Length: 111
Image: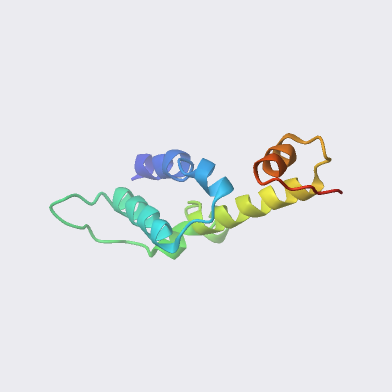
């Protein structure tokens, strides 16, 4: 169980980061990612589901709040999108991301 939890926190939560940084995640994708994480944590297989010992919302809580500290992909997606917006607004005209977006969408923006 501890090994599965470590894999979820280090790999499964971080695999979609690139896409979550740029795109709003559809609700169906969020549910599917959570489903994969839950199934992996509890050791489900094709032959059947195992008994869930704790609700998923409890697992998503930080350790300080008596949870397991697994990242919520929906909140992570929103935070990454807000970081992107903040970075775009705070960069000077010569910032890479700002130039790339302005060039791609032919925007002429001034600070």
